Length: 263
View 1 (tube, rainbow, N blue to C red):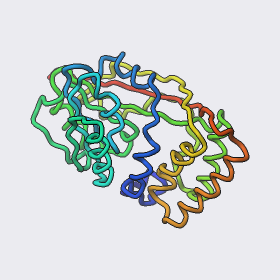
View 2: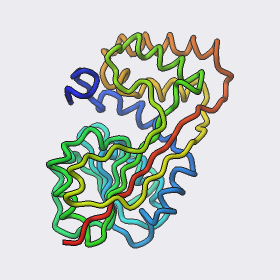
View 3: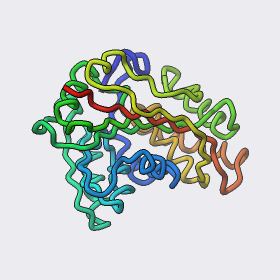
C-alpha cells in the first residue's frame, strides 16, 4: 500500500506484520468497548460491517453483545489471522479480504459500519456514497481511533523516538488529543451525531509494549526483516532501562459517529 500523504509515500504492507498484529494489537481496554456500546452501536440485533478489520479485534471483542459482524481488510494475511482467532473462540464472523472501496453489499444491508484505526487510509469520495447506500435508513458510521501520547508519557515518547531513528518519514509520530477529522465531502451523505475524545491508560508488559511498537506501521509493516529484528533488540534493551516489567501507557481515544441523511 502506498499513499503520498502517509509516511512521505513510503510503501507499507500490514500483511508483513500480521503475526505480531494478532498477538500484540488486541489492546483496547474495556472502557473503549463500553463507550461504543453506550453510543448504541454493535448491540443485539444489529448488522455491522467492520472496515479495515485487521485481525478482527473489534468484532471479536464485541461479539458477545449480540451484533452480527462482517469484517473486511485489504491484507489477506490479516484476514487469515482474523479467521483463525475467531474460529478458536467459536465465533460466527464473516471475514474477507478486499479494499474498503471495493466492498459491495446490497442497499440497506447494515445498521452500523465501523472503521477503527483506518479511516484516514480510505478514498472517501469513493467509499462514503457506497456506505450511505449499504446502511439502512438512520444507519450509522462509527470512526474510531486510539493512540499513545508521546509528549506526556515518557515510555511512549522514548519508544517513538526509536521508531523514528529507523523510520524518519513515519507520519504516525507526535500524536496529541483531537477529534477525528471528517472530510467535508461526508456532509453530502452524513451528519455528525456524536463526537467524543477521552483519555485511557493501557496496561503493558515490556514484551507486549515491544510487540505493540513492532506491529506499528513504522516498523513491522514497512521495514525489512533484519531492521525489524534490530529495532526489537534495541527497543527491549531500552525498555529494561526505562520501564518496570509492568506499566501503563497514556493514550487518548476519539470516536465520531455519523448518521446517514434521509433521502
